[in-house]
Length: 271
Image 1 (cartoon, rainbow, N blue to C red):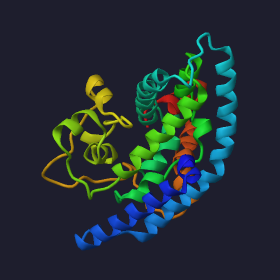
Image 2: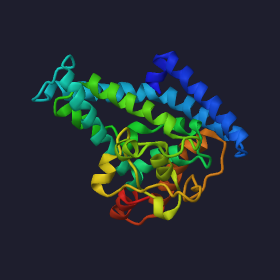
Image 3: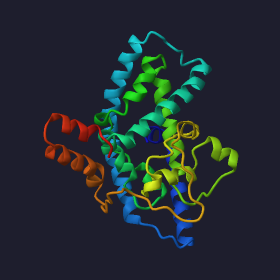
């Protein structure tokens, strides 16, 4: 979202898409939960408050790693950006996959999956605790192997902006060659489903090829609408509760666990 705030025309496009989606859903008789959308906006405002702090901390770490990296790729070389695109996509796949399979990381990522209605504002439900969940480590590794911090940051920001229009039911399946290579609304709907057979799938950002390679791809069903939200349902419009509910659940489980090893198993085990 930081890239969007820096370029108001991006925010304008996002707003136009949201309004178009509202119109489509009302015409189709699907309804629109305005209070849930407002809660998503509240979560996004909170994230915008915490993001600069996270950015300063991770930026300092990235600059330190860039100084000690044995390889210094040039940000002015187009090949760095091409290689960086695929490197960021690969790192994002594993970051996203671990965010679903390691509870400590899921405590932040669960925020994004908490909306029970699959609409564009759900794309901006992003956790406030990114730094503590350590997802940035996956991208710090790219800096350590020689990619400039600026390249990593810009490509990751573009990756997240690309995913904004994926959060809609208004766009059905796209041509087969697009669905085979790129992440699409259809693929991302399957990713957001809370049904057992669709948990932990379709982790790609811009590309879906890593999911196909590593066996985590699931196709959206053609004959029915999926159920969205969390397995442990959260019916709340309170941005703070949405942002922190999974940390509360996890820390309570850690407190109940007996012994240090059991507590580690809770924190690092599956959600």
